[in-house]
Each structure stands twice: as structure tokens, then as C-alpha cells.
Image 1 (tube, rainbow, N blue to C red):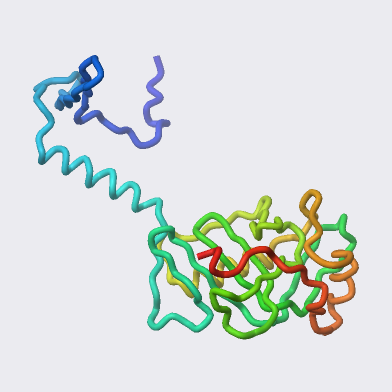
Image 2: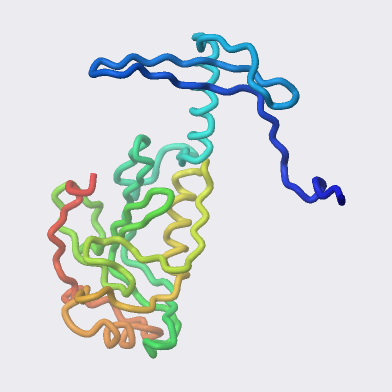
Length: 236
């Protein structure tokens, strides 16, 4: 018989095992037994789980969890555009002033790729998801600032962005400044493709709006923005 073990990936050997016992009845009691494993993978040396072993297990589980979680760092004093940083939920809220960016659209929309002026925007993101809203002015938002629906394709009424097939790769440990820039690039470098079902983000035709703005240097017409039911305070 051919030995194919060299074709396997990393081989892990059993080192220990836990067996959880529970009594029957309304007031059930629990007991955990710890086993070492011999070279053949058989359980040996059964004994109650010790405090030291429990701490080792807790440390290992914590480390594994931390490796998957986002860790946000700062290169110094946070910029004025950062409005809220939640280290527990790993969420950042920031805003951008009116700016010009290149936008890409799928062929079915019939809108050319090009530069367009955008309204001020509010951004909310964690490691895996993004939400965006429009703002009425370039002033730094407060908790009472009224928000507007983001005037883009691929955005739900609640602000959540459908990223489609965009391969979002945010590092586990990242500077806040790099984090916000990365999300802005992911958003604007994606191809806008469709409106969400039964929802028009602006007053008027969204296709006509962007056709009129692409490569024209016209200011974004804020009168087409629709007010959102949310304020910044609702998003904190």
C-alpha cells in the first residue's frame, strides 16, 4: 500500500482530553475530568480538572479569539474626522467632507466610469461590514446632526452597504487611519451595480443623477438627498 501521509497538511497529535459529567435532576451538578493521551492517542491518567489546567485552557481560548478579532491602534492623536471609536464592538464612526472620487459602474447601468463630486459622508464600519450616510454640510457632525440616505447604488435604506463580491481584507491589527482609508477605498473601488429592492435613495432618478455628475466637475446637488430617520446618536 502506498504511503500518502506526505500529502497531508499539518498533522496534529492528541495531547489531552476533557470529559464533562452532569448529574440528573433539577439541581444538576457538573464535573470535569482531565485525561492525558499516550503516544497512540489513548486517554490515560484521568483526574479532576485542576485550576492550573483550567487557566491554561482559558488562556488558549482567549488567544484564539483575539487572533480573529480586530485590534485598532492609533499612530498618535486621532484626527478630527474620527467621531467615535468603540474598542468593545471594534467599530469606528468617521466623516468625510465633500470630495471628488472616481466611481465605477457595471455595464448594465450604462454610466461611464469617471470622477464625480460627492456630498459629505458619514461612515460606520467594523472589520466585516460598512454603512454610509450623507451629510448636509462639511461641519463636524454632532449627536443631533441629521443624516441623509447615501445617494449611491448598492446601499440599503438603513445605510448598510452590499459589498457583493468585493474581497474585503482588513488586518486584525491595524491603525485607525489605515482602517478608515481602506474602507473608503473598498467602497469607491467597487462597481456600483443596482438599487436595493423597493428603495430609491434620492429624490429623482439615480442613474440620471450620476450621468449628470461623472466627468463634469459639477457640485453635488444636495437638494436631491432624502432625510434619514436616524441621527448620529442612534448609531453610537
